[in-house]
Image 1: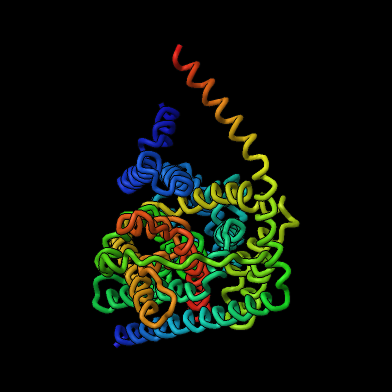
Image 2: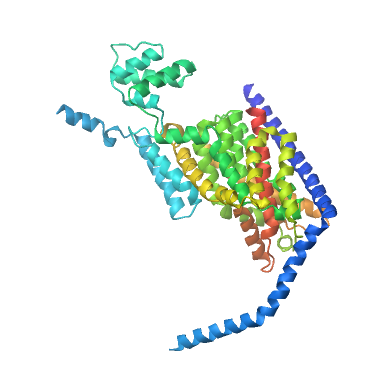
Length: 85
Length: 440
């Protein structure tokens, strides 16, 4: 008798718990989606700066690329030379 | 000659019991697994060592001053304790019978006032709480250590992948089925008379399926402190075994074609979204499930410190120095629960068996949920990332990535799997909140 009560309690807790986890995370999904949309609408500048920043840095760094390549190839050259001895 | 006898009777060898020998061996085994097999070494080294310390005979590192006094004190002190407890000891019986009587008296719910008086008597006689006992009562009974670790985990977690694809939260929810299925399994085993778990104990065992160490410890300290040692050991040992447990289940439930599914690139997530997310989560917790507030509150706090970008120092402390300190204390405190009388029981084997079932079911339900979502969703979802819904950050995500690479060497699922992975942390904390609400 007590056993079946325990089983019922377990089953109830399983259904309740699983149900609640799903409901909670569904609410979370909806609110996160809304939040992202709102932020995307009212603050497009933040996203835009986030995207332009890397391109800007890459533009300036491309000017330095030649120099970097030169330095690396010199280092490789020296390394190989030292290995030969 | 008398002094020699006293010395001998006070030695570890004289007082060693078989259970303690076995538990020291268990502690050594944990150390071996941690050091040579690299099983969650950060936790299992302190736990294993704490387990050895707790089983040193006569040292009483893991017991309170009162228990210690009852075990080793002179007859005079025992009489004082007895009078504090409001009983008189039979003058004809031997001292060991006295000790036994007092022990039973203390264990079988005596009024808090008398217990405190007896404790004071023991302290006055020069006995003090064992080191590990103090660690346990400060760090775990209060719930502080798991919560601080959760704050550190929050400070280490990047919610970017989750925010870029919020639907992966469903995978984190589905994987929590492991928790509840195991709870039911434990209850069913008790109903069939194989084991003897109460509903509270079953719930604490189920939480192992959340694959989240601090959550498991937090819940079992509240619902079933007597099983805490076994539950913590099972949780951390299986977390280390995630790369072995998960892949066969993942392969069994998916076809080669499904494993090769490529997912679309995640969109970039703005900083503002990342700052707002922990606050949003906190508000939802406050509105719907205040019982999860300690866990998720600390988690959100840690994450806010990380993302807001103005408290770099605090965030750094939370995810490095503080979490390390607390891990040491927590590990030793858990070790104090590895005492022979509570650990060497059939229940421990049951917990170990149920724990691995919990992991397996959690993995399977995550994968199945991902397959279901794949049917209805426009964006393709690789079912492998569903397995990352059991928390075990970031191990489960790495496993999903690895199995994906086996099917298609150019398909990197790691970032996609991080979404369900951190969703699993939230999911298991929510599940913990429900359990505490229902049973606490």
